[in-house]
Length: 142
Image (cartoon, rainbow, N blue to C red; front, side, top):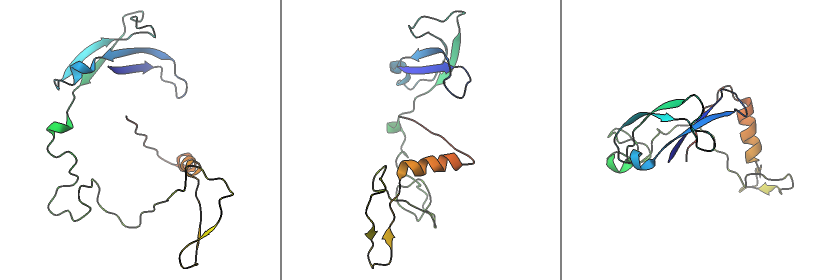
């Protein structure tokens, strides 16, 4: 089932108002669903006052999309095949030894002896990037 969770508008620790449930068996047919669902409490009992949530859902299977997983398919595209984004120059990639490396990690001299590998701390760098960000786009899924 698909669960729609409704909470109070609080930035942290918002109180649950109720949940509505939609069976996946109805969704996977591909037919559009446009209906009101009852909001239920944590015991799946309709909440007082008969609150409802309006949902519109339509499932589109990737198996029916002939262009799915092909990336940019323009004949003029000269980038990496099956990629969704154009190549860019000047991008920075940081390779991590592990998610968190303690300060005792030994120095490693790189080929040619000119430079020493500097280990990075993934979680600390992610935290710093989010903390210092002027804008953040947060996308999650399963």
